[in-house]
Length: 115
Image (cartoon, rainbow, N blue to C red; front, side, top):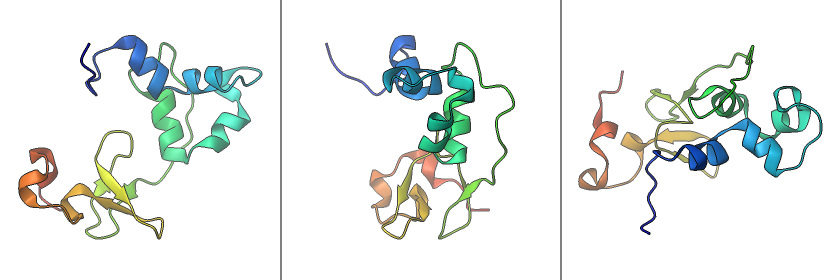
């Protein structure tokens, strides 16, 4: 079997990209929707994404609000659960368009306009 990063496997997606699965694999107590340990395991944007994305059988009700993550270089919004980015040693995020990667190696989607 050839491994793929394609997100077309329900089992794989639920297992890798949901709070429910993280909660289960970490053997936390109580309900995953109110687990304080899970809430503190991720920054807010990723906590919300893991709890509300399409890979959940039941989505997190009333997710906390957060400010969108922006590229430290150009200011473009980076969706941490969906977009490509680099986390710098200083703890800032840089979008793929601003990283030091040759243009011919970047996916076409990262060549969008910087607004």
